[in-house]
Image 1 (cartoon, rainbow, N blue to C red):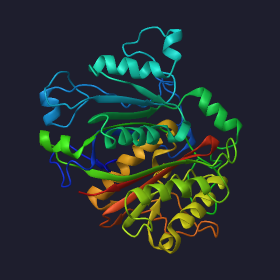
Image 2 (tube, rainbow, N blue to C red):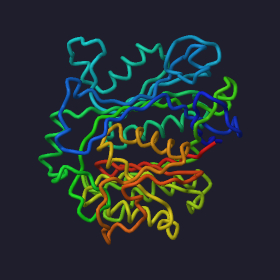
Image 3 (tube, rainbow, N blue to C red):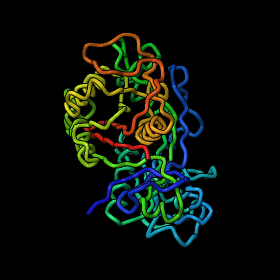
Image 4 (cartoon, rainbow, N blue to C red):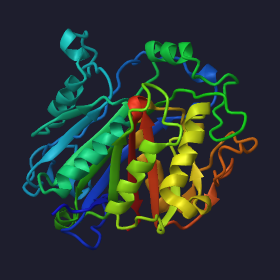
Length: 371
């Protein structure tokens, strides 16, 4: 029988060990984008990716919950894994790119080799849900008992080709500001960001004395296949993924939710559809749950969006502060939820939901819970 999933840090295992899957965040860095003038490709542009490795961590790394650092160690479980999400990668060290390096899976191989990780490596390239899909896949592997530990990573750096595609598609903000759910929103901006989390079973975390940062009791994924680029107008796939995650978390009505980190791109198509999808999934609870889009401060991190927003959602739980939807000016009748406009809000949520959507109708949902 599948076990639920928990998020663990390097401090102490939570209760219910042996039944749940713990996620140990290893780190996160995001470079906020608020103006179009900031969207200048750097020298490392084009290196994007996300990883869920199955590797082996050293004794000191295990004690500090940095499972990706080191090799060896006796109590690392059946496997530790590396799951990569994103696009083509270049080998660290400045070596000249080769044809093999343009294959997305190559980045997982390179990172696993550098970190001494063993076992299967997987790369997800399904656009803006890639790193969220990596987390979901790792949770499934752990909850089914196939592995004990997995490392999930996602990254995106703004580069010319992708910037040009979004620009030619007229998806970028016309005034250089991202204003999710606001009546005068005019588009998205891209941003740089990377995050890594280490996931493990609660039993494994307890054995090594790790302390959970959060748990992941539910996850869901759905594809509505409505359009190659536009979301379903009623947010059908997003609602389905959310319902799956809530059912797995034993909270089908979302009664325990205290916050939602929305996909919230700031485009005309996305934000209204996402609002309707949340209303469909949460029914009467939708209007009373704070919802915010942190893309208003980080920009859209594409393949890395899911995992960076996963960490932001976890911090909202642990710090007791809900991140705001920045740049909000005036309400849109089409977007009628509580969007935490412009200022962070003190709160004490026990559970939170983070959702993402991607081209082709792909949708993901993850429920996080404070220990």
